[in-house]
Length: 462
Image (cartoon, helix red, strand yellow):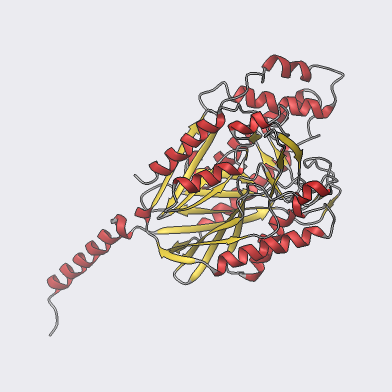
């Protein structure tokens, strides 16, 4: 029997209203993920960390994801194959990516992987160097801005092809014979020897690994059975050998690229964890042959974490973003007058002036209400922390201890203007990382940051 027109009309209205309720109900709110991956390789002759580019061994990239939600602004997580993005460089990166993604800059993180044959980006420091006639010697603003522009366009294109996220996966695996602590202590408890990224000293090589995080952490995003993106986190300096201007994404980037080829439907994004006092020195003599060995060890760890992935359904109500603008304490002996004296000293070499310009930018930034941002992204029982500087591994180990019931990951090397961030005892112990020429924060930073980390982890649960 044919349904009356009125009944059919009411049925359509009821169906439409039901679908509207589903669409606007937070329990059914959709998470979507957009991917971006663009070139970040400087040209021959442009400056990288320690020399002009003389060759490109491996291309560099900007990679990341944008998570969009029905009931909260998008979140952008970005990793760049450069040595550092600092001060005003961080500001421009975050603001540009935020505009492209339709969000605010405090919901964007930008992390360098810290390859030593990668570019630097610090627009405020470069402005000071330009005034001294040193523009383009240590950084190239035109290249940096062109890279940012490519990333923003890729985000816009990626949003048009964003895929639903139904599950989040986690995996963890031990990485063998890569990480070792750089700081070897003597009987007096102070640093006796430094074991950097490469080492040939027999006593240093024979010494134990020391305090490290041996595990690679992995977080993956899935559309039902299909993996969309994989984020990996590992705490170590990423160098095998460097310094002559032969651009490379290093063993961290090469391992990541290998996983791209092995799981081609998925974008792999790697973040350097809290590896400020960690490097491959115990297992790396700096030889050319050792880079592929380190690459394979890290790739094996990535593969093992992937094979051990456990997946859980995810909904928007399980997701929370918390960000803090923080004022990291600076050393009492970081003085504007002394830094300006170096900049105005005609006898000072160019490297000293570049360092003074970067330090002065950080000092000026620290006269405001905040000088850095830290944040956490919660995805159910996963918490991903985003931190500034060359952070000591003790910070990520402490974060995991704070929430043993959660899968906690940490990306460091965000705001690079502060340089190294040690522990309180580390400044007493001495060594390179906590010296005046390497760290632009005071020993009080540990107590300050540990409280902030705990607060972030707790707030994301509310």
